[in-house]
Length: 342
Figure 1 (cartoon, rainbow, N blue to C red):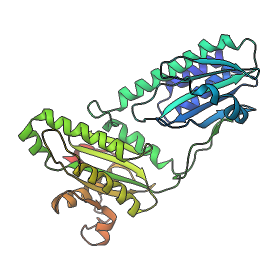
Figure 2 (cartoon, helix red, strand yellow; figure 1 turned 60 degrees about the vertical axis):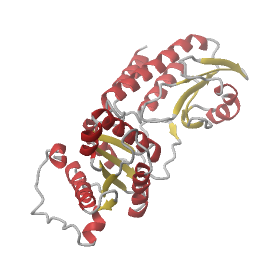
Figure 3 (spheres, rainbow, N blue to C red; figure 1 turned 45 degrees about the horizontal axis):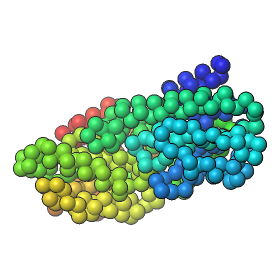
Figure 4 (cartoon, rainbow, N blue to C red; figure 1 turned 120 degrees about the horizontal axis):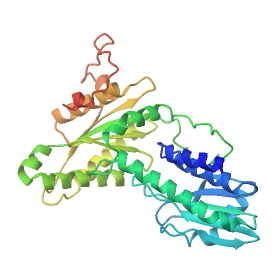
């Protein structure tokens, strides 16, 4: 009983939504013990489930020959589907999705135990505990209006970004088959500002101003990838952190979003544009520095026509922005984001 309680505690204490599925998997493995095969599938809407995280001696046979026959029966209703297949007791349940991603996660298992039925409710309970933790993280980390990440999560996410350039070594024997094609790619941060947003509020009222911000959040989710970090900093300012191999690819991603905003018809307001400044992120950066550089590029974009994307490093190389010397850079450990956008 103690190991199970410890695993429940680990799920409830986990503040990193990326590590939460691993905590759930560990709890289920601890509960079933023996020769149990346990896996967590990622499934895009209308897509095929892909096994990403798993443990067990015959897990590949289970994933290929046992589980597919009943995974299609799993629904987003919190119900655990159970079957006896090839002498193995199998089960699967869809996990509570996060608002940050459209992915569906399915927990599946099989075990050669006559008394495995007694574990069914415990596994369903673990899935509900996982779901409650996901909801708590969404509540505390998401902006109330746009449902993007909020400003207070930025520091934690930024620090995690700087340590995630290489694949972490698992602290247990579980296998993880996430797609790490972009692992090690440089990180880039952009600041997005809605052009003439005060004019929108003054002309159409704050209700339609809020609608513009809502649509901006929707366009960000549709344009950027699931692994990109999307923030609303407050007001009409947004921030994106993504990985791209070089400046050109980063600029392409940011321009794609700018064009999607320009081409979107906003209710009552009509056409809206945005300006974007971006910069490379290094492992020597602190939030103040990196957001400050992106903000300088944003300011240049707004002062030189708006509705454009500008890169800080390129502007420095062209002489359009003068990079401060080390002596001119204020030394402070405090991150005052209000000062940057004031």
